Length: 218
Length: 169
Image (cartoon, rainbow over all chains, first blue to last red; front, side, top):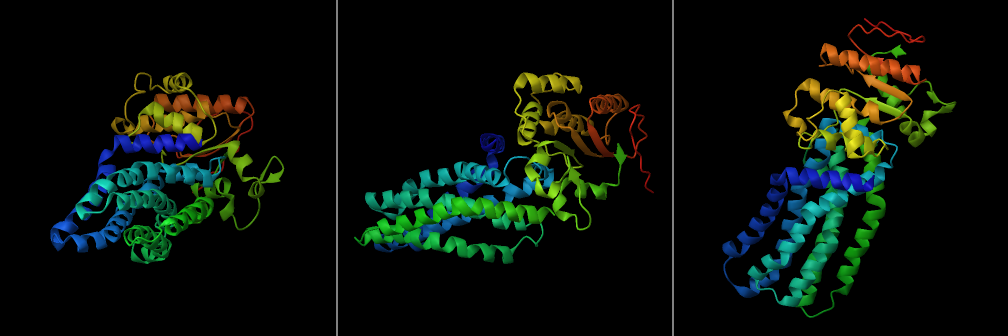
């Protein structure tokens, strides 16, 4: 069942590639525009690289997540999911995983290439990629709250603000890991903290999202 | 068989919103047996629950898997053939007509072996032939001891012995 949901969402992404490519190109464009606009000063680029890459990744994943549940809601799939004998949390987890595979993984793979534009040393590129690898699933998992409450509350600013506190720690520690590495201090603590966020999200986010989906369809 | 107004569906289907009274399934309140109740029930409402970009057969296989019945291609083709969609299995649902989409959805009744069917206007957009087909399905289901709760605006003749009709203005 879990596999069916993942398979379905991957299949849909394959059929509608424009959605996936939009997210990826958005990420690439934002990250590439910064070095062009602020000038070629190496030390400055190196300092701002982690922040820019992380903010771009966060915005890119926000861009695609809004659509996920709203499509299912509109065509009635969500209704069927709620009436499924399968655990709703598991379905939500499956959807989040599929979303991460489709949008998160390409971002992670592109990050080291884009990092070169900022003259990041090889080790920093490695840390950046690892941090994104751990952090992007958190973004995919936690977005559920927003997209599921969207149906009720006007699509907009208020709900984005509500979910933002969940993202900020990931953003801070993600960017912090790379900065720490470049400053020559250990980055393990930062990565461990993102890992911890990921584990907490894996346990609680699907469950919380499932309850909010139930509430939203009542 | 009871014919109820669509608003009541929410009560049968989603017990959570029921503020007064209780619905029992096999002697237990459905409030307390979520999963088991859903496993015995098939709900088909106004919304199709199909994905435009997926093919007919993919839609059927995925929607029945979601309902807890995993079927293979052969079983899915057989059901679609019965619903008059033979030869269209590989077409994306977006190219189908409204009536054909409806048949894709209703094909789930053939593959999901549940005892309770809750159908909200299942005959919408169907032609005369298809209506007869669905009528046959309903008869067969009732004969096998199944339960159907449905709403409809069309006249429907069922020979089954225990049908209750509520006419609502």
